[in-house]
Amino acid sequence: MNLRGERRIAEWLEGLGRHTLSATALVASLFAFGVKWRGLLCQTCFFGVKSRSVVSVTDAFTDLALGAQAAGEGIGAPVGLL
Image (tube, rainbow, N blue to C red; front, top):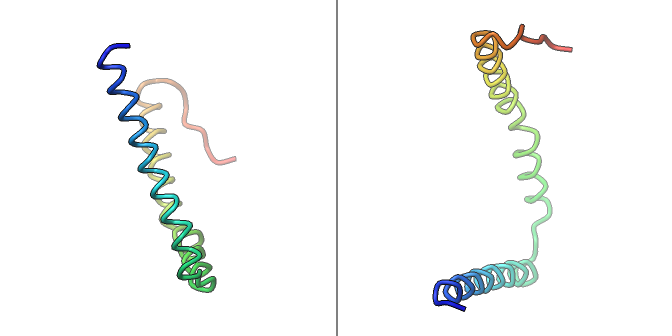
């Protein structure tokens, strides 16, 4: 095996070791400090439900841009909501 291959394998193993250490630290912190389930539920609700309006607006503008691009290139008529 040449030097480049050995270096690539060594870098891959080093990255695997870093990820293993990060995962170990994560699991250890969950058991050491405990999880505040109410806080976790509130954050999950905030990111899941409260961001729905932002996602909807972004989706609408993306659809408008794709529809305008398709109409401008003559691909076909923009499709309305079903």
